[in-house]
Length: 163
Image (cartoon, rainbow, N blue to C red):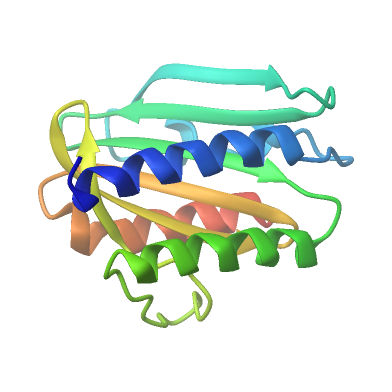
């Protein structure tokens, strides 16, 4: 198997571990995810939502939103504190660096995973991990200019997950 195909498998496996390691808090995680109401000037439909219990009976959430211009997959895991979330993010960054993806600080996202190119439903997509408070958030975006637009969607998700 080529190294390029291993990265998405490793990231999906790591995210499965993250789901198993999450810890709940006073705000239900599903309330921190983006929804159609966060896009008032665009026709957006929620096509999939996954609210599940981890093996520790803690919630972990994921939502998929679609519009004529994009598909957005957002996942969120709440940890007991932000130190744990940053530790997990550091592991993701190390894995990506070994794959040749270098994180670049962006205003408001000085500590992020870097943007990984992958596929979402067969379309080119860009994925980004970041920490907001004690939440580790994963954004995957496909559509026109997804590599440029992933930061705008991450800012919107950060605003929502930080509330």
